[in-house]
Length: 468
Image (cartoon, rainbow, N blue to C red; front, top):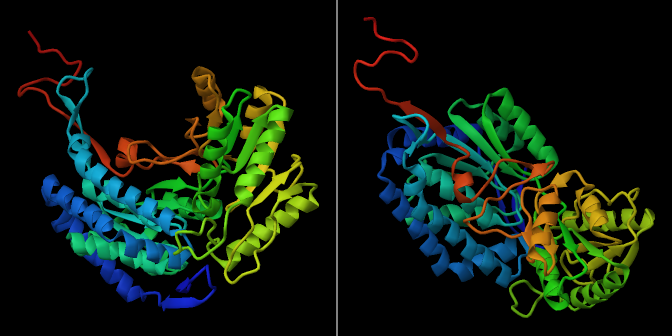
């Protein structure tokens, strides 16, 4: 497996990194285990929090340079990179600020003398994707380091400079050797780590295939896993949705990170034929106005997709859709310029027998549907194997919540596209995976919820009475 930066805006290979040897990997795991046993979880929580706050401050101070690394590694627009980095810093601050509360013993009201303690488990393996290289790491590192676990991270092979930059931030902040380590490793070495008894959990964000493989390996080793495997998030536009704000939200939901987001709006479903026509015209105009350019140029509004392979995959899906009877209402072709640029694309007339009807499309391609009523919109939203996020647009907030609850997903947003903050749990159902990241739920995924039940000295076992 080659770890290398191929700048998506130019196609030029900028840097290449070798994978580490088995011996080097063993040394890293030895150091992580030593750090867990002898150092990191034994530090006062205030000290761990101070280190994470320093990491957040370093990210904010160095945001321009780090955003440029994001642009070179995976083509992210400089403005989008800035937003990702600010969110990453906010996550680290959030867990630094809340961990003491989350770690406080929790009395069980119906069991006098009984309390739950959140205790660390050991080494956690994080397997992370390329689309949000800093955010994906921050949302693992924040909770896991604060709970007292240590983390080893295998990042995507096409964002090596991002992986190294995040590790450098951790070191500069004072995270000790062994508490966090970046790994340039092979797939076989990933299996070696999961099999290692010192590694107590694995979290993965990636494809269904990768998730199934990792979950199976973890299960054979009786280890917990958390999987976030993408989605096909529906955006349901009800009859009364305000027009202009809904179009703006649709553009943000679809085109953030060039559509390369697990929770991007991947299907727009509009209720009503005339409303459907109006929204389609508006989306054609809005998406068609985007200007491809160098991601480092603030004037650019359309970034390349992450790689030539990603571009070819999207072009293949568009051809499949056309062959299945879909109409290309906008775009559909490669942009004639260096780099991996795809025209913003809108597909209509997609029937259930079309190959892309139930596929995830990871890029600036929007399947657009028009349905007769709310019931048909919900049925269409749920007729996919995924269940990550979804959104509903309406002036009737109670109706919006009811429709949101009917969407088979881990998250539903009313009058905003699916998005992420440190305070809200993130995760899905169905083939989108299991477990949660962020918020207190994410904090509690890899902990030993240990029960301590105290009875007075001289107490008899429950149900046993003292003899007269």
